[in-house]
Amino acid sequence: MIEFEGLVKKFGDRTVLKGISLTIAEGEIVFILGTSGTGKSVLLKTLVGLLRADAGLIRIDGEDVTHLSEEDYLPVRRRCGMVFQHPALFDSLTVLENVAYGLMKHERLTLEEATQRARECLNMVGLLADSPDLAFEQKLPTQISYGMQKRVSLARTIAVGPKVLLFDEPTTGLDPVTTKQINFLIRDLSRTLKTTAIVVSHDMDCALEIADRIVVLDQGQIVEQGSVREILDSTVPLVVDFLEEAKARGVET
Ligand SMILES: Nc1ncnc2c1ncn2[C@@H]1O[C@H](COP(=O)(O)OP(=O)(O)OP(=O)(O)O)[C@@H](O)[C@H]1O
Ligand SMILES: [Mg+2]
Image (cartoon, rainbow, N blue to C red; front, side, top):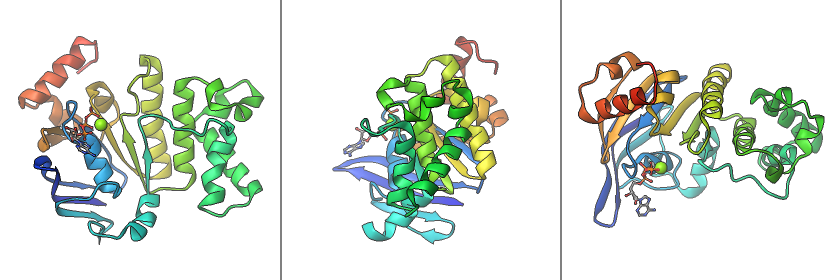
């Protein structure tokens, strides 16, 4: 379980998060929606301790992590697998090595164990099974599509066995077909691995498709939250705008 209680984050005299209180249950898939610059990424970064709160509390599985030292935050960060917007793979390592690297470095697996685990994870994100090309795992990131790079990055994150998966705009910049695939992958992986997933997005379509709960942020505050059904019935202007925009793109609401 993840709990935010009155979370405040400031940059200089600018308050970006203005008292966020939110509880996310184990195994839940929660979408955090909001327009650009509203504090979504800051919220994720504060959760994993890359930014520190100015007030309020963050608890993970009952443990108050708000004021942990940098060193004590490391195991917390490992429990929370962050999938960044850009895949950020090592260009000089193959697909397989990219996934195996962290397993050897941080989990102290042998080359053989790490290779086997990396293959399992590449399979889980549908890469080896989908690819007719047996040499796929030996390719370099520059030799595969952007959508595939995203999958490799996801495989790398799940390889170390996080309890929570955090996605910052996982489908931005992808075509509609790949977007759908990545969405369902997020949902299926979260269910299979029994992880909690927090997905930051400004894409209502994705949220309606896979979220258990949708939380809408506006200028650093939660203005609405609920199940897909409840969000569809929302009268909050920003939510209505998001829904209208999704409808205009032909999404069934
Ligand atoms: N390290 C930082 N230092 C100063 N200001 C920051 C920092 N990080 C974020 N901000 C500011 O905080 C606000 C919220 O940023 P954030 O990145 O969380 O937005 P966002 O909701 O993720 O937007 P987007 O959808 O564009 O990614 C922005 O105005 C941004 O300029
Ligand atoms: Mg962002």
